[in-house]
Amino acid sequence: MDPSVIRALAEVIGPVFGVLACGAIPVALVYVFKHFKLRTRELELEAELHGRDSQARLQALETRLLAMEGALGSLVQTISRRQDLMQPPDAPQLAEGPRPLAQVK
Image 1 (cartoon, one colour):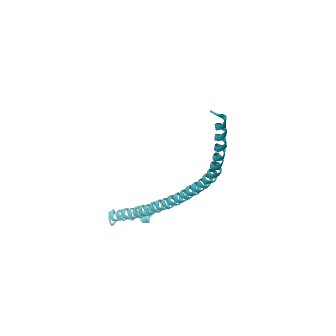
Image 2: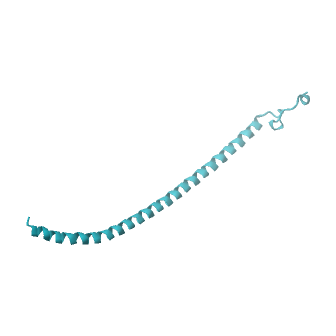
Image 3: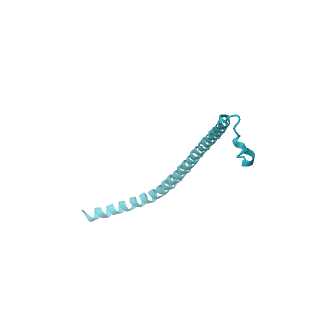
């Protein structure tokens, strides 16, 4: 290549890269700031959504636990009533407790 062509290309390419760098750097900075601001907002919304979801799960578990406790209490009451009903009328009640030997004679 001719040295004058190389010199002409250098004179043209230098300012082109300068203008490109001066234009691209601010655009890239704005893009990066906007991108990370948007990503941060997305993560905050996702964390809020998962917080509500876990709260709903916890509430459902507490409701189930209360239902199970109620059913178990009802079952215990039913069993204790049946034991009272199954005893013959002349048998001592279990609620009284064991009698001393002196009272049995």
